[in-house]
Image (cartoon, rainbow over all chains, first blue to last red; front, side):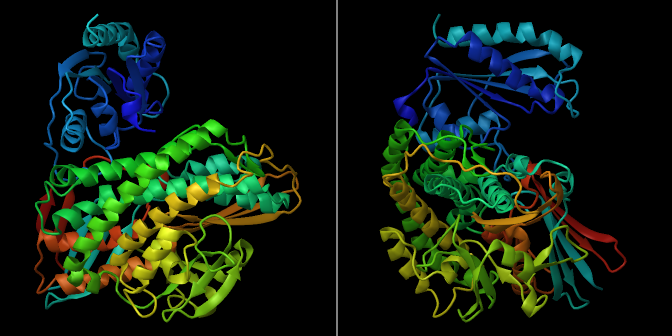
Length: 159
Length: 474
């Protein structure tokens, strides 16, 4: 398999753990995006428990990237969409897991990729304790997050 | 005043561990230990489960080498069932295990160790990581990602999941290989060869600049254990175990999984949750041995595939007998990746590989069973006892990291004695002590990996346990 033979214009890259409460909201949104864009070959959804260096290749094969993750720094249920730039501002201990900035940096260094658009959609997490359900504020924020996700993807695709 | 240097956690490993280095009054290293600080409970909580659930349960132990646990567990179950699996199923499992070996070795070499090897042990710790490698050697970054994808995509094609595939079951595999998947894997082979050759050539160019590290990175005589075929070639899934001594003489050959359970003991040390495996007839610690890529290449006389054969011959030129320095695990890992790529291609050319008969069935015919396989980091053994209904009464797992535990500890001590002088050390010198552990590519916590920000904290503690100095990286 070479990714270049099957590129997607827009890559949705979600991260989270569905066994840790609100940490799984990224994967819940990825599931929704899979269904919403099922018929659209320009959209590819990849959901992982963590973002690994291997994903740099997926990023390089796409024109635009929408990262989705929960955020423990935001107010529970707060939906945020921000632009992300390549950056290697880590503390020197990166091994298995990278953040959105570092993944973009890796894609640029290794594959010379420059995404047309790269955005990070976050949903503020309330509880990340063991459990498969979302907290009330995060559950309530899902429709809004879905709306932001849809709008961003359609904008990436020029629709 | 005596002091203790603590490196906690050791970075760029699978899981969490720490190193303590104990200094005497003169500031010389007296002792050093590598501690595994997390508890593994899989043996206990599998009790009471039906035996046929064990492969899928045991695969959850590890996100890096679930396939090895699947295979060893399925083989233990098949010993309970007393069945022989179909030829095609054995070949498909072999391919799956090799694919996992390729992706795991690529992770170890490119993501965890190449920052030390390509950027230097003394390089800026802020850049000494995969991002630094990508900036300095993008072609090698691409090769690493490509080899990881090669292995993971084969696992995904065969097992329908990249991690924790459930395709391997007691008796064989759940479904045969489709011709389209075979062709897709074959199409990936040329790129995998190209990526491996790039890495192997790069490694050979830089290896000579690490003579000092080669000299003190767990460089001592030891015994070695690994699977081998009847024709003396390397094996990862079937075959039987061979144990050799430091001079290369065979201590025991044809060791089955059942014999393993009799011959291998597990000692306990108070400073680690990981046990210390040893060969009982030699006692502990004399019966300690090494497993994994270095051990496997030391015990075999041939690889069984053309290009890997050439590389094995070159590898064996490193020493008159067994290659002793654990630094050479890196080299051995790359030779094994090459073997894996070649062997996968060979397996796919087996005329029976698309055969639909891939599973044997049976109930409980024995009340105990053991199965073994080679995980990327060494020999893995699963041993179960069941009641007449197939309920698990007892389980024991002997993992590769436990079998390398004594050598890792001795290696840490050897490197610490060389690099820590007069109680003084630098970050670069301590990185070398950590790098000794990395050569073994230990998997410490299996399913409970702790990723992300891994600061390095070094503390100087006096004889009374009072911290006299502390350095934090990250």
